[in-house]
Length: 152
Image (spheres, rainbow, N blue to C red):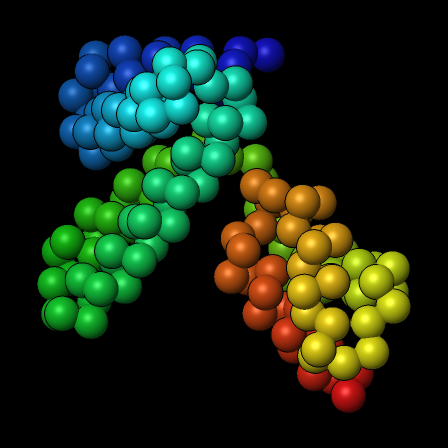
């Protein structure tokens, strides 16, 4: 199986040939963000895990930007950001469904022995590394808070 970097390079060439502007600009931006991260961390070449972290960050940036554009009644720019998110998500691992996320969090709550909302930190410490790349931090946090609030 090709690495994420190889897939990005191949898809960049395909996007150039197909003249797919959205995909082309998005992949170029990602490659730039990866290069920036490598230079920032003393010229260390990022492995797949590092590249996935950059991709996750870029998706979050675009979600935030789309929300801001919608709030400012700029539907055209929000739509552009959402198209870029779709391109980025093709390189990320499949996201957990709401049911799978709830099950994983319930398991972590049991492991942590959490009794109330005060135990949020302990549960997050267990569940966040497990679900890295499979669910967004905000979604994890919201579900943990919801399940802890039901406990008491």
